[in-house]
Amino acid sequence: MSLRRLLCKLIRDRSLTYNVLKTRALSSQSSDRSSDSDTSRQTHFGFQSVNEDEKWKKVHEVFETVADKYDLMNDAMSFGIHRIWKDIFMARLAPTHGTKLLDMAGGTGDITFRYINYLKNLGPAPDNKSSSVTVCDINQAMLDVGKVRAQRQGFTEACGVNVQWLCGDAENLQLPDESFTAYTIAFGIRNCTHIDKVLEEAYRVLTPGGRFMCLEFSHIPNETLQWVYDQYSFQVIPVLGQLLAGQWRPYQYLVESIRQFPNQEKLKGMIENAGFRQVTYENLTFGTCAIHSGFKI
Ligand SMILES: C[S@@+](CC[C@H](N)C(=O)[O-])C[C@H]1O[C@@H](n2cnc3c(N)ncnc32)[C@H](O)[C@@H]1O
Image (cartoon, rainbow, N blue to C red; front, side, top):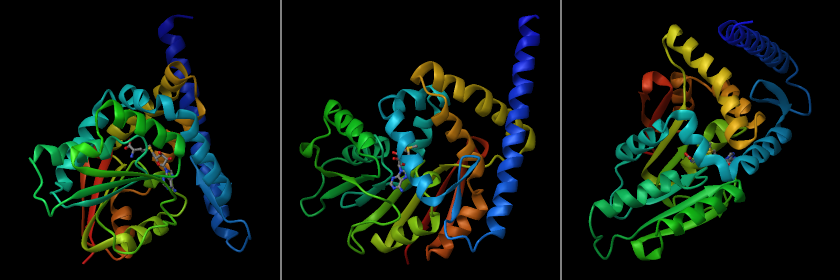
């Protein structure tokens, strides 16, 4: 068989698998809804239906497994574009001296480092305007990689921003009410079991006037582009995971979880339901991902 025919066959087979998994996921979701009275509540982990406790463990396992290859894989899978998305995200937040940021699901620190750099570029802070960032993540392994990166890049106390690393669950924060002026969550909310609880907690810990910002994979409104993106996601990303990180499953989960995540309008509605006002969103790279923003007023 020629190489071209072999590749076509591989793509056809994997597309079939994707469609079967997707159909299964949809039917298991409808049977989940019809058995709401079950004691163990079901949710999705990628295209699998699992009970809620199991999802928490599985997500934890995914990031535990990928922690030391996480940054390399981000660059490889997105051709480095995630760096531009994160730069735009920080430019939209536009922090000022005195900002108290909670970088939720902060992982290995990409958003936090951009925040510190942004403040450094503003010049020296007035004495009464100290800024801080709390990097919170459920996974200590991700935070540990972040701490090493922070040291390597010279982000210490001396750079004028107080940095705290905290292991905690976005759905149940051990942090006081109204203690932050900004809350960011980048590529994190999709992995949480109860998005509504995450949003409630974000609202609780923000000061009045505080800003919520979410950067997350989203949905491409154009069917053809979505098809091309699906082919890339389902055929290439897990293969890259296997080649570069020696792991297939976590990257299969990644692409499946993106498909399961609410679209731009739905997420906007959820943010409004949590009490945020002036909720807007901006699509990046045709809607591959989106920045949502809202204020506690
Ligand atoms: C894709 S990484 C994003 C890391 C970082 N924000 C970035 O943009 O590179 C997702 C992170 O969400 C964290 N996470 C998943 N569920 C969480 C939860 N319930 N509470 C806090 N962090 C969570 C994972 O441990 C992981 O570090």
